[in-house]
Amino acid sequence: MHQKNTTENQLNDLTSKSLNGWIPRKEIQAFLNLKATAICEFHKKHNISISKIGRTVYYRLEDIIQLLNNNVITP
Image (cartoon, rainbow, N blue to C red; front, side, top):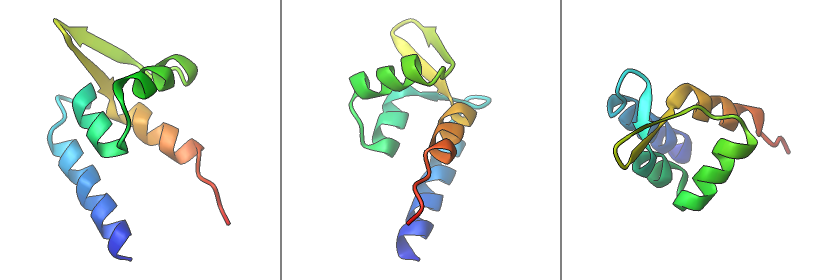
């Protein structure tokens, strides 16, 4: 139960950092505990929308949540 609350808090924190639903790659990396190359692979394999302004890449939070929901493994 504690982990679920922690994850919900992290997701709420991530949502509060979004710019109209767009999240910087560094925030997504921290949330998923993945390196930039892994995030880039998700973008390519799972058709996740990105936007790039200067050197900063933004991902749609909705796409990240959908990716998580589509990859649920039940015991």
